[in-house]
Image 1 (tube, rainbow, N blue to C red):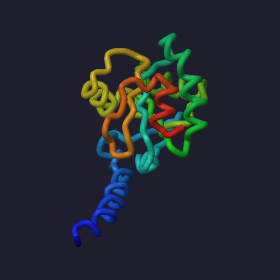
Image 2 (image 1 turned 60 degrees about the vertical axis):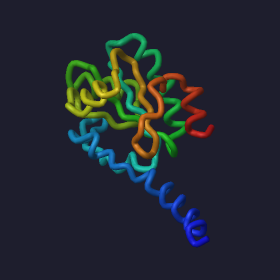
Image 3 (image 1 turned 90 degrees about the vertical axis):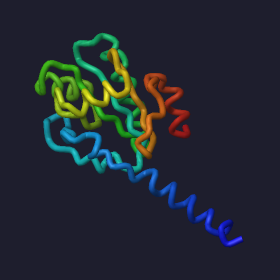
Length: 155
């Protein structure tokens, strides 16, 4: 009987720890904003995180990015996006982020962390949007389906 009384407390602690995933362990090279300024990975805490593999030179990326920007703005309380750019340098990445008004952070251009995430999850082309739950576990490799992503967010 005593064990049964502990179950609600255990469930609450599991829910609380799900949002405590340490994204700084994943993004060891840090995160930057469009101007190259440092962004604290703790800003991702407690949110679904979508890692967006993209580049300014990619026509399908240029088509999808405005849709993702709008979606991310609508869901900013639940969703954080992190760009992993395939642009040829930090300046090109910055122009891409600024030009499309991306309200999210990015890995530094060419970062090892970005390459590792892509390699670990079999990213073979762009645009690709990997979606991770609040606990850091991969939820979807098909994040470009924004209707499905909305359902994952509880919309």
